[in-house]
Length: 327
Image (tube, rainbow, N blue to C red; front, side, top):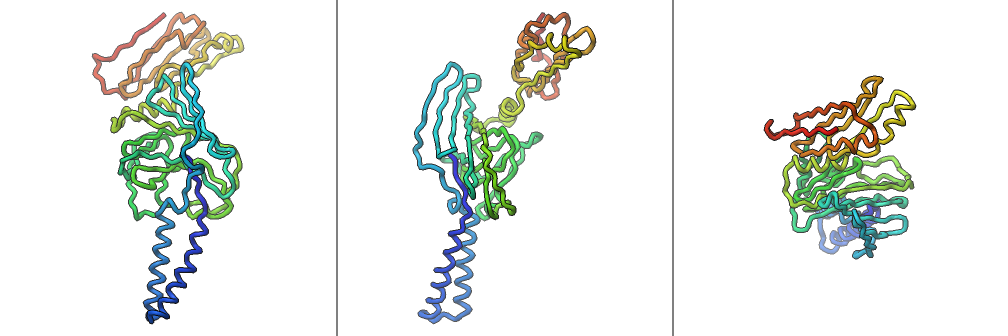
């Protein structure tokens, strides 16, 4: 769901009745001034901890559940759309080519003095250890109840996992553990004052934002290799590079319009004036690959080609390595 953070200035007004109660208690119960002051300080400290530790003080849903969803079935993908508030909508998409990945896209125009966050949770989970993938390795960040809320946010470039919940990210963002089995991801900020959570300089931004998060629906736990393999498909689809040497060459290779199957990298480039083509495929950790050369070259006639495999990321033995060539 989408939540909105507010500055929480109203909480500070609770200090007035707190000190009033302390003053009355000192007069009626004849508390010594030192005891009354200690009581007021203790209650004020508890309020401050509640403001920092309790996400419910500031994070509130943008719309009351349940939302009205509009469903649309297609040959390849199923869609469900909902308008949360004016200028903010959410779309859920589940496609046949990735039935275990639920794509959640939020279109957001943030009002002033609001920070929009996306909250994901797993019912029944008590997990409190965030697992973040930074493009190189998985890093674990354990967060406790007594960690102030500003200190719970961590940078998540590609992937954020919390126990059985795994969310693939299409853009770097901040993620925080806010409750057992629940995490929040930053979507948009438009604030005119210090939010006491890292933003000291006002940021007034009314630019529409398109934020996409992809929830992994596979039964957890799954291996880290399988999780990163799915993340690679989300964040680094196969690329096709064409480097023509002339305008005629550009027309010749105009048929290369599709990406390859899930490969780490596909590079197509001219190596000589004759226009020979090199296809380089680096596999993802034991992922089976079917490389139809016709898809890559389309109408281009491949007189000679070379396919090289980089097996450094694979755990399989040499007996399981198979390269199928095509004309």
